[in-house]
Image (cartoon, rainbow, N blue to C red; front, side):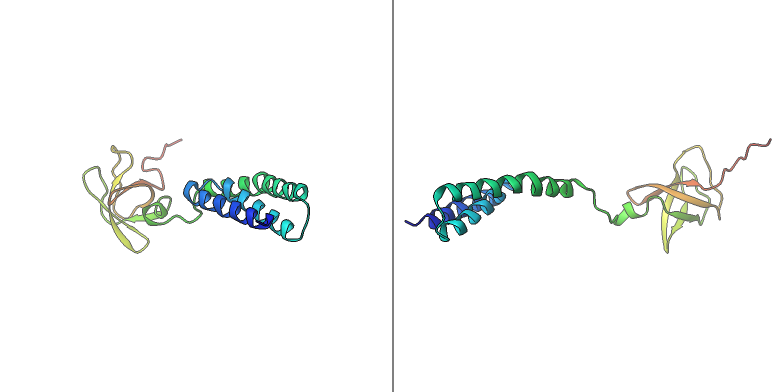
Length: 150
């Protein structure tokens, strides 16, 4: 059996193993086996084939795998759903107390309560959305309700 066929079989085995493990290491080694198959089909000696396999696999593991791992660990740049509402400004449509309240966030009406349960936010006040719990926005007034007199 020609050497290039052996390298292709090894690449296929490593590729299948990569699909089952999802580590990226075996996939990069499969790429190294493909490079070795190309060198074998060119008629280069087995020592050069092994060197091609080793260098390609090592380069992939040293360069590509850390880059891919870093991208996998990054949080998504786009916030969606209720996470996109946190940090936005809203308008109190009714008085917002620990028992009831409504605010307008963007163009939508939300039930609301103050983030600090002891605060009562008057109707018409500008508030910041600090969190969303279920269908209730936890808000805090943008300006201090009780300014300190100096």
